[in-house]
Image (spheres, one colour):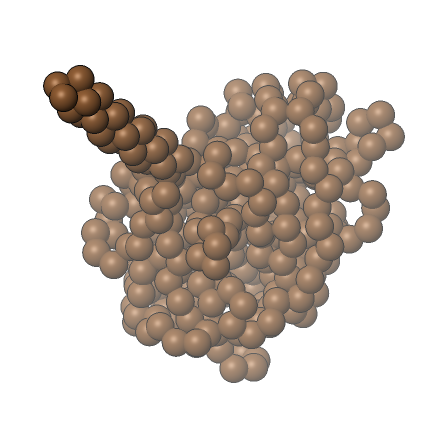
Length: 317
């Protein structure tokens, strides 16, 4: 549910933000086939004045999508009823924003099962607005597999050793939420951003230790908030790797500067949960700096051994 949350406690959050913030890059239209792992989850549920609502997701196996748990009704029996009645749709193979199941060309599958993290929790303020979540991640099993093609691909996920430190410049993709009022474009959009390396003490208290953040200055021009459940990816060469799932967004103004704070669940910290249910067909990316260092040390050690052997040989002569 693409709801941008703003709260007065963000001022307190930003008072702890001492690391350098980022400026989000220009928003661009997604071209066909550019992000072939991106999934739109469309729900046939009346929400406010809309007959449908949507969330983002990412294809990690031909029948498995990863997204945010808050996209689905709570409790679980309501979600089960939705899937049983075929009222949740997974759409791929398009660069258009769908707010209904009718429209231009797309690849479609119904949803058979939704598995939310067993520790998933929602935190509300006094007005019953959701202000934070914990372990906000879910796996979605489709009825039909999405067969790989030019416009449909499985994305790699980081191994348990490949943490977010390997992800410096990232890309977020969304159905086009570009203003704080939730207005959307017809096209899918993307923008580049960076992980925030400072401390956000209040958010760290509200959220679980499995999240990371981006903090971007907002000059008033359109900014891409992305969608709930949408991907946070980094490219290693030409290889896209899914590092996060978007779970929350906030706007704030501190000292006449506008900020957008976005929270993401870390894929790397949820690999045990993912592998418990998706046991085959996952592609893991593993290029840990520690491995490179150990290889370098091994090479140094080999040279040291050769040097010692040569020294011993000349001494013997």
